[in-house]
Image 1: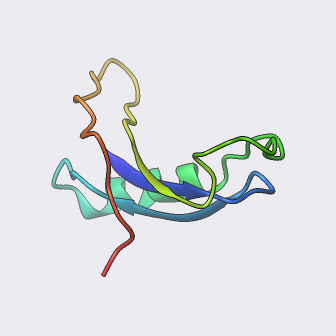
Image 2 (image 1 turned 120 degrees about the vertical axis):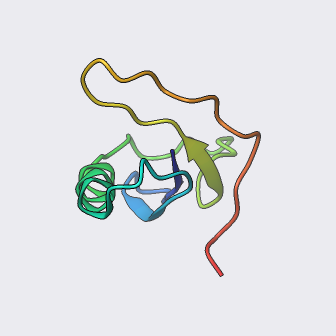
Length: 75
């Protein structure tokens, strides 16, 4: 589980691991992958831009865990 922020331009402006599987290298690889994602430019009424929100991420046959309702910027 990662916490992510997407800019109005569509790039990932921040991301951190919210819930780790316990493997630091896998966590770094996952964050590298998440940071290269890109979304279309925001529409004027989009609310999830420049805010932090949880994003479940799983690879292969792994099941995603339930996302919390929100997350905040790292301290």
